[in-house]
Image (tube, rainbow, N blue to C red; front, side):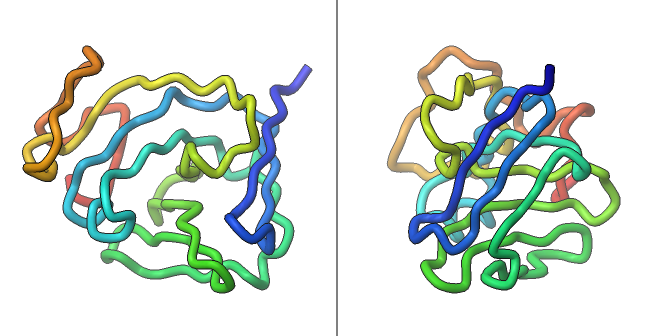
Length: 139
């Protein structure tokens, strides 16, 4: 039986359903994620084929680099997705899932770029940049 999760942007103009296994939450502290979100990103991911989006006409994509783009609701501005151009998977912001999501923190990446106003003290693995299993645009 497929693992089903649903979620949306703040206003509900963009909704999504995942039907595959979700990765643990990765906290990204890179400067791009901090500047877009105001803090850091908390995201899981799923394969492209396991994501169904409704209200796609309300989804806007920003090419954050030559390697990746960020998807957000053009009505309310909620950040929803991060998509590497060369991968068949998509990151989904953990906070956009309906509760209970069952998501658990997995690791922190780009910790050298974190804001100076907070500490990382949850005991999860921390990586200076990324890891071999998590391909990002900054690597």
